[in-house]
Image (cartoon, rainbow, N blue to C red; front, top):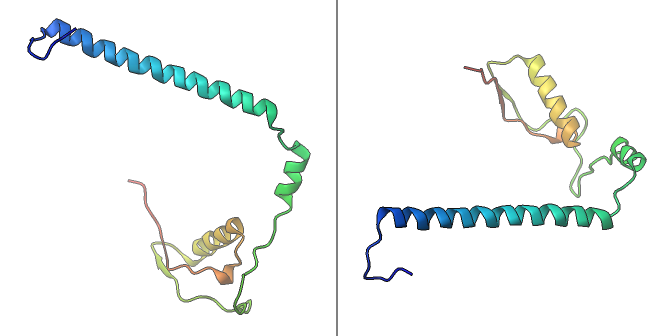
Length: 120
């Protein structure tokens, strides 16, 4: 073994560093294999929901209702919207998509600005 007072040659230093790197990669591979095995083992014991039940739950989504406060009327909005390099029709489509995907009614969302980002 190397003592503190001795000097290592370049060959010995390379040998030690390569051995250390190889040991680290072997440990990483062993850990990856263990994670894969544990994942498969857990899947054996945990029952997955039926595909039919998953489709039904996707089809039926709850409408998000506000927890408290006064509901806004259907025609009332939350402020103004600044459009940058985009038209009102495109902005309306974007806002409708955000409302649909988030499940929040459009009159409960507040959009500050919509800006077109051009590809360079």
